[in-house]
Amino acid sequence: MKLDMTSIKRAMVAVPVVLAAAIGGCASTPIPADKYAGAKASIKTSEELGAEQDPQAALHLKLAKEQLAQAKECMKNGDNDSAKMVLDRANADGDAAFNIARADKAKIEAQKTITNIQTQMQQLQNPNTTTTTQIGSGQ
Image (cartoon, rainbow, N blue to C red; front, side):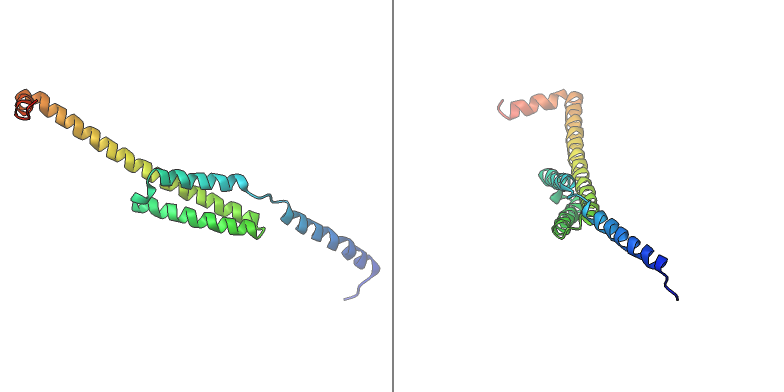
């Protein structure tokens, strides 16, 4: 392979341009502080709702916490692109834990309401039962 002066000049121009683009691409990714805060908030609200009580919600909560720690490590090492992706997963798992826990709470409340309605219907169908119970209880 024969190198002429034109090829050498092209290489001398191309190498700095490629290096500048590579360095500039790495340095331009900002720290994903908003995504970190969002994932942390998602985890906190899931915990407050009692996500630990449901096995499926607890699993998503555990994954979100692990991913949050992994993202923190990525940011510490300057790998903000990876941190963003991991934080997106952490936020999704935190949201999943929250929604599962919220659904569990809604099921419990719905069951309480159904039981309350059934009790009231029985009392309406048997009004003497209520009176006997009240007299028998000393009211």
